[in-house]
Image (cartoon, rainbow, N blue to C red):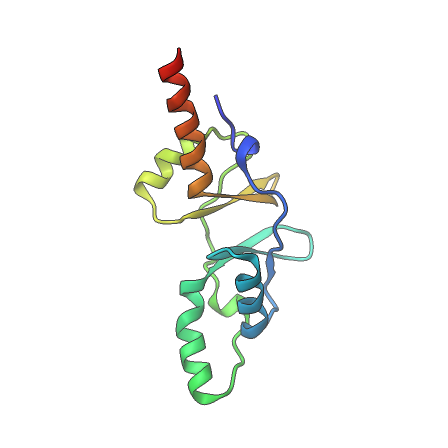
Length: 134
C-alpha cells in the first residue's frame, strides 16, 4: 500500500496571506505549479491559491494599473487536504470526484507538503505494472 508520504513533494515554498498579487504570481510562476498552499506564521494551512484564482484580479488590476489585492482576498479558504498517512488509493478516489489537481498535505494542522495528480497517476501506474509481473 503506497502512502501519500511516499510520493508527496515536501520542498515547496508556500504563499502567505499578506503577499501582494504580484508577489504571489511571481512565486507561482517560479514554482512551476498551478497553485500553492497558503500558510500563516506557524505553518498552519489557511487556504490555497491557484493560477485560475489570480486571473480575474490580474485582469482587473492590470487594466487599472493598480493592485491592492492580497493573497487572503483571492485564496480558497477551505481547500481539500490529505494526511501523510492517507493511501494513494484514497486520494485517487477523491480526485475522481473532486476537481483539485494539487492537494496540500497536512499533519497535525501544519503544512508538510503537496501531492499532485501526476504523482498519484505515477504511483498507481507503478502498482498496475507490478500486478502484471506477479
